[in-house]
Amino acid sequence: MSEPSDPSDQFDDIVDAETDRDPDLAVIEAGSRTLRTQAGPPPGDPVPGRPEDPELDKALREVETELSTRWGETKLDPSVTRIAALMDVLGDPQRAYPSIHITGTNGKTSTARMIEALLGAFELRTGRYTSPHVQTITERISLDGAPISAERFVETYQDVKPYVELVDAREEYRLSFFEVLTGMAYAAFADAPVDVAVVEVGMGGTWDATNVIDASVAVVTPIDLDHTDRLGGTTGEIAGEKSGIIKQGATVILAQQPVDAAQVLLKKAVEADATVAREGMEFGIVSREVAVGGQLLTLRGLGGEYDNVFLPLHGAYQAHNAAVALAAVEAFFGIGADHARTLDQDTVRRAFAQVASPGRLEIVRTSPTVLLDAAHNPHGARATAEGVSEAFGFSRLIGVVSTSGDKDAKGLLEAFEPIFAEVVITANSNPRATDVDVLAAAAVEVFGEDRVVVEPRLPDAIEAAITLAEEEAEYGGAGVLVTGSIFTVGDARLLLRRG
Image: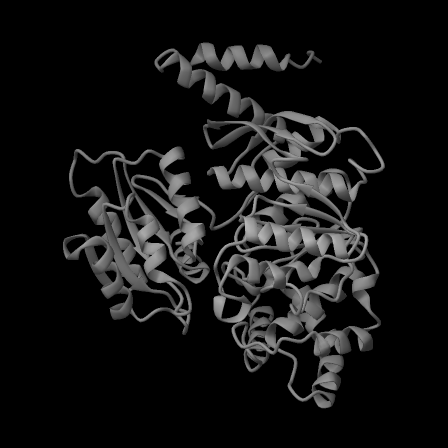
């Protein structure tokens, strides 16, 4: 049996084989391909489809229908009374494992996926709870890095249903859709059992249904204006609500924040006698280079530097998410406090190289390239626009946009205006989607009438955008970006990735 080739020899062989390409481009391509080889083959689609078994699909739809009769995620009663009562009758499953709790405005799900990948690479059994879902409700509850099966989802619902009904009968209001799902997640994690749960808040922090855990690590991704009618009109006020996940004696991992938000979060940490690690101070990004299929990072963690970290995601914001995720996992393992060392470098590299974040600058088609991104507020849209410009360099980019009615649609459109040659306004399948005429009026105000196309049906809008991208031969580097809402992305993903 022959000896395995040295990675440096493999790198040189790939560069030598790229005889017809620009030498610098060949080196970049070889570097990222070598890193991907170290990570193993790419994983399959991380988003599950509907069950193929008709009976199982029927059972899942029945559960979805029952859940849909409850308060939706946009109707809230700011209290954890009902979820606490559910946890009590279930035997407090959320206390059966340690947890990492994540709040913030943008980047929560991507950061949760990175934390999950790192913990899994260190052979811990993980449970991850995130929201909303891209395509299928089962995505929200993951075990060992994969969404639970439809069968297990149905079984978990049936297990908790009697207890849910018991609490419903006692309380003034029935448990909401999100509260029931949260109870299901915590019960599923205890039943697995998991070594650690990675939990993303639904909204806010203090009164969010997830906030019945006592997480040893609290993560706060960047805070910006969103849900202002419920959380507050300034980033400082919003930070006050989100700071509620910081528990006594915890370690707090803070992404870069607006000054007023940082002040509120630090004050809360002092009150809770929590240890704080701040991006740009105790941890952060040392260097970042664009690579084929993602980016190459050097990260400074709580215990030292990690170089040659390949992240197969686009955009500077994902590099910041990676720095936050790494610090959170280091804190979970006691690095920076109990231990002055780094995590195993190769394990960290392998974990990051396998990260996927569906619906976040995700390529679902080529010729022309079609990207999906779940940006739904101006802050997220600005980060996405920067990521697209940096990673793709389209000669002509067509936007397909549908937003939710409670969002700052004009602010989102203004963020995308510099990179969109034209925008196709449409509607997604969610009942809360912004009225097409209202959104079109905002788009005309931002882009001018000549750059706005209206197609009320999303399939027609995507087709129109692709036609616009292809219509002139000189635009060989044209692309399409479908964005504005997680619901828009989910609908488009079903149309393009599955179809």
